Length: 266
Image 1 (spheres, rainbow, N blue to C red):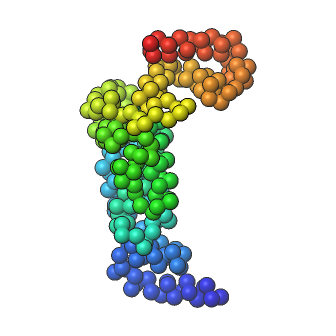
Image 2 (cartoon, one colour):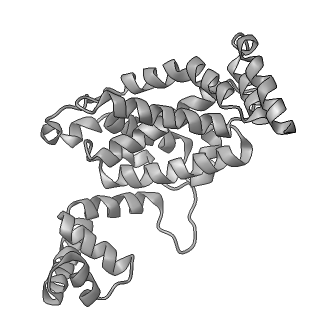
Image 3 (cartoon, rainbow, N blue to C red):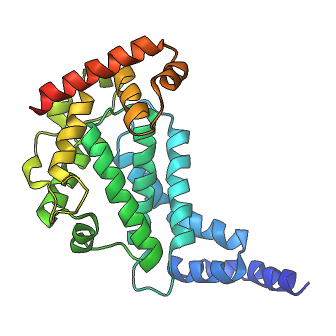
């Protein structure tokens, strides 16, 4: 009864809340858990989400789907933002919204990014997300550099490559398969993307990138078989059952994949 009375009090004050900043509204939302306050926050910030989506140039994808993805990123930011911090909500939300849209682009299959960019992007995003949850702010480039063991200049070069692939240096169109991937990532220096320090029992980043590049040379079936064998630890018989080919074919394709990798890496 008391909770309902408090909630009704917030609802009655909605007209007064319209003049408040988003940061103050989020603070009120934390105390009230009011859907009316949340709706007011969304109305005040949805233009930011839609602008980020428009800037990414999604081509033939449904506008309705893009808007939903952008709003999902916005809601995530609302739930994770600390209104007591000195950060503007728009700055905080930008990374969440663009991150959700980036995942959507990747999962849609419209852009086939080089494996090393996809892998490094996951390492980058995982670190940033965990840092934000723990510290309630976006990490600095120096903190990211230390956290994922890549020098600052390497982080900057990776971001250039990622921007080229995902964010609009190339407009996504219905003829994506005709886009030259090398053209999309030609304006960065990959030699700068390397480990800051050696870690025991771990490949340095520059060697990982070479290995990921080599795996990209394999056909999709051979990639899948290689991953199931060496990363998932399945037997050749289990792999055959999973991908729908004989054990003998699995063995042949594994040998073929190893030969291709050796040729590329030597």
